Length: 283
Image (cartoon, rainbow, N blue to C red; front, side, top):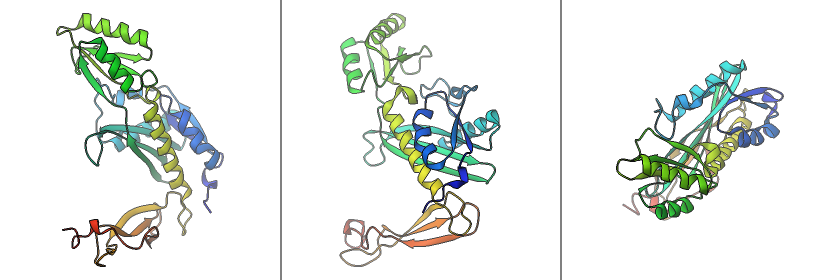
């Protein structure tokens, strides 16, 4: 039975200016008993933007940690969280846009740092063109106007940026402005990746919150500290065809974030690996 009393009635700082509280709070509050306090007063774009006008220093996790720490300082609370997203090619084929969302939870009172993760396909396309018809086709393919767009004259590195493009009239107006401002008569258009402007990303943030919830509800059997989770997967699941060890994992190692307790638990969803993961059957 999950132990959820650790955060009953406690306030948790969430620093965001892009509406993430709308999906994070409902995912956590009813189950943890906490109160998510939306923290403002700091421009999180200073820590990096998806439009590349402000570069993000460090890793995705480090950026999320900086936001959470800033929220703790601004709110004066002992618990804070923040999310950070990244976009790139999918890890399977490298052919499709992919979104990874991290949601970090920092508890200075208990000395904990827990991270929820979600990932999936993304709306993060771009196009450079001088043709309005091509812009229209691109917009439809990217789910506009629900997914907002960003436009620039000339190319992707131009510092003149039109954000918040959320209806067809404004899209046409910004397109014409960019054409007029462009030295090469080209317009660069891309999907707006800010959370409130990108429903697909917001869904992944919600899933990251649900992953974080599972981790916070998993408590150490020895000391009851939240965040008891798998930290290692040991390979060696036997091949279903020849019985030799494979690269598929056989055991999961669960570790406490505070005390020395750890547990090695065998895999329960299957007892043999597909021969395609066997170096002997599929060299």
